[in-house]
Amino acid sequence: MESGGSFGAPLRCRLLFLAACWAVAATAAGEKVLPPPSNLSYSFIQICTLNWTWNSPENISSGCDLEYSSDILIDEVSQHKNEWRKSLFRVTDTVLNKEMRFKVRSECKNSNVTNHSPWVEASVPPKGVPGTAAVGLSCVWHNLEYMLCTWHPGENASSDTNYTLFYWFDGLERHKECKNYSVSQGSFECAFSFTFPQAANRYPAISILIRDDSENVMPVKFNSTSIPSVDRNSKYTFQVRAQPKVECYSSKFYSEWSEEKSIGENPNSAFNFLLIVTIPLIVTVSTIILLVYLKRLKILILPPIPDPREILKRMFGEQNEDPQWLVTVIGLSSCSGHIGQMTIEAES
Image 1 (cartoon, rainbow, N blue to C red):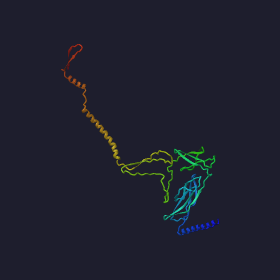
Image 2 (cartoon, rainbow, N blue to C red):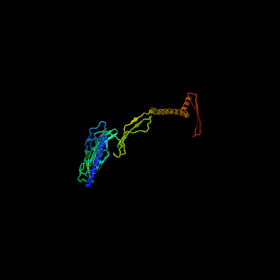
Image 3 (tube, rainbow, N blue to C red):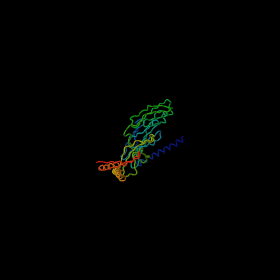
Image 4 (tube, helix red, strand yellow):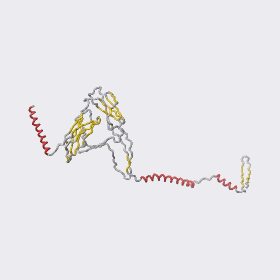
């Protein structure tokens, strides 16, 4: 033990000596340690939402482009949610049954060289008896009308443990408590009505700051599209409809189409309208002319057969004008076998 103590003292002296040398070298090089933010604290906005605030460090040069880097750890495990911002606050979700630690530091950009301060940390201790928190929490949104949540009791929870489910979403002023509880074979469940309010601006604007060492930033939604080739002499009409992602709920149905939006002009629209009006008119006139022509052609090819009654009337009319007209009719009688002669004289 004495030899170990005698060995540890020189080693501790060497480490202190190296640290002192590094401090002297840093001072000689003119580097200054950036002071960290101060008065780091948090407050609950909602039951599961925290607002972390801090104050800016003092004695910062005017040429310093000051930013703040922050990160979150759950049970000493980083969540890889590092953010850079110029504001003096950050809103995060919280985990009530685990220890949550938040850390922030100031960073100064000057002449493409970044200096940063030491981390300042604050933690939120877990609430409740360890091992009694609900496990396996799962919520399903049914038909966009109500949500059903199920969970199992913690391993250290007694048989008479009761759980209370609170919920909150953006647009709701205060969190609410679920009332419809039931227990089946050791599994808890609760259902509550869940519909978003009809608001024009439901989600606030998101501001993203990208640095050289930032992770890849991917868009979470697309509100634009592009067409590879466009005809200048054509008119295009666009409509948009939406379909939910699988993460929201499974559905093969789309929303209704949006209102139409047209761009470009069709120079042939007037000509097309003229064709639509002219072609039926030409066909109609041509049909009428053709029917009249066919009727005359039919008269020439197939003249009408004269009516015998009209001929006889004309014949008898002409003979009635002659007073000396005489008609002799010779009749045969098959019954008596007599042949006679009868004369009819017409008088004027």
